[in-house]
Length: 317
Image 1 (cartoon, rainbow, N blue to C red):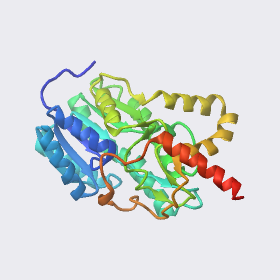
Image 2 (image 1 turned 30 degrees about the horizontal axis):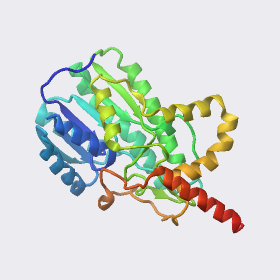
Image 3 (image 1 turned 180 degrees about the horizontal axis):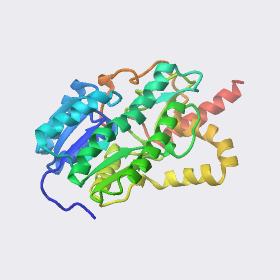
């Protein structure tokens, strides 16, 4: 049933210093909730905290936390409980990306993508669910991705981690059916205009970009909070996700042939030389954080990629 309690809720958000997590924190603040902001970098969190205070948050707590480290997540949850005595909504949106084939991505980078995206979600659930179970109420929403339902070229660490998040949510739902007041939900966006693509580790031939159609982080955040409150069902954000998933499941022979060239056109930047390196996977790069990623119109970018492909073929590349 939808949550109609008008009193301020306690909303804990991971990945709150940028992108979807920042949008969730700001929207929760605008409705007068208490917000607890978790991410690795304090400076970026403080910037988001200022905006949350201006938007009307009942209170704002900044808790620098690397979700891939279980002890840090435990400390953040304990601090929240000591201050507020409860948790109402928990959103796990911390995530990092690495581009490149498995043999191209360094071991420490590959493993850290999985630690942050998948094991970070496990750590969050490990320490949050006992609180929600004791209360017999509250919601945890983990942010997945459409690529947690299919495969795409040169994104093995991210794909593996997001398939794992989807499995984790299903397992948690089964394990906690005895607590009817506890909601465990999953939201899977497609392309979103956030800084995650520009901050990604890159070891392939091209940099990534959000594929068409590109949603805003505010749109995804609104869906997350609606799901947490019981006003919407979890699952895919956008009908394009369902079309892609259908192709992957029902027409695998066609999907496998088409995904390579289509991914290059729709989800990569072929016009800019790639910046090889670990991006923000191994450590926070707070100077690149922000609500939006600053990506240009997706259709224009796709047109530029098509032109680049034609140019390369004419030049025999």
